[in-house]
Image (cartoon, rainbow, N blue to C red; front, side):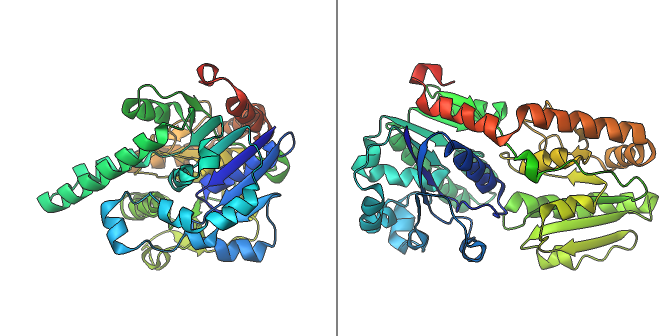
Length: 394
């Protein structure tokens, strides 16, 4: 079985993007029982980290030259995810990599990958599966609806319809979709009722995510992410402005650890009157971040999509408090839901004072990770989607 994977995101082990982590895990596990060839763009802007890592997948082609800005006229008349012009400019490198090999299936991951369907050899692959975690069409439509200016609303709607047309054209070659949650599955179906959509969640390598002991004496909460991803920045701005001051008022010894990459200055320089905030840009090992906290908070307030951080927190044995939006699609994990500052306070008080509760959540979630969220189990499910007849994929 020979499978071609085309990813908008750069795939390598140390990536800090949840979507790239998920896909890297899939490709790595798929390579155990299939001949996998991977083409990557760099929509996540992680080329410097990739080069420092010194590692890559087998049968791998990185096309950094596909990422430069498109000419202004092209950007005006075409969808922002339409990179066909740049793909055509890289045809020589792509054709050399494909080498006229026959592929049994192609997995296209995230919107920019759809542009590769302009290549006849890729169009001709019998089974084409498309994976997207947070449908960009929904984001564009919501952005247009939220504009107060009539002119801006009109321009954003043009972007939406350009992108919708681009998807419709690509759908002629797509035999199945993969969504991250049942909620995303419903959204995709609302746009494309005839689409065959399977749900495939995020998996982890249990050897890299050991169950960590709790530190019951520490009132230390944390959040981690790449802050170039707007929902992460939105979440922390909201938490620092509306939630943390209230929590620190009732728990003066509360500490907040903010970890990740590209932490904005407005967050880094935030100086609370009570409580303590520490920003750490790069943890050498992600386990070090989870060792440093007692409870993981996930105050996501914008967009759907992948909830990588929650799977990792559960695997490491950290109780989780999240907004309902942030926990969407993870109903099988025990996640304490909070939207108001009082709900956050009540949940934290319970976890800090009731060690039986904290330990029961820790062990229940770890068992669920071991049973459902391993990379190997999900890769087998992905393999079945890539090889199944269209009618059997959902």
